[in-house]
Image (cartoon, rainbow, N blue to C red; front, top):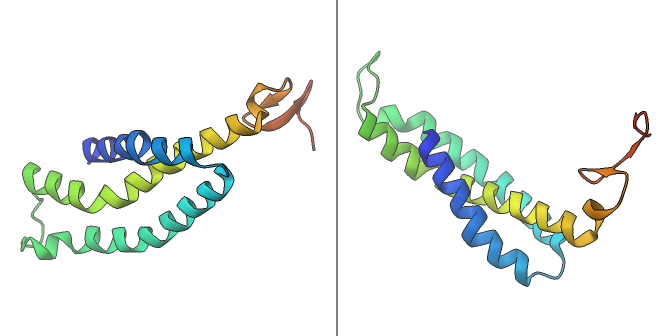
Length: 119
């Protein structure tokens, strides 16, 4: 499962968001659209994960084999992880485009004082 999560997240980061973020003029709108997409995909990802054992006709107490587990997680996690990888790239591009990360006194886009975070 970890391998499929890493693969699909990297694919979303590299392919989808790299092209969208470089062409987009409003990175915040792109980030909001991807967040809505993630919210829409999440319920449709959790249902097949729960139903996988029933679809593969396993008996109670049986654990899926490595091949079946890898293929199931690879197929089910794809759309969600691609969207999450695109969300990471869109957020990073949005912060860079605003110039927040280059300003002195800002940590991750949040103003930081000498004694920690300011209200």
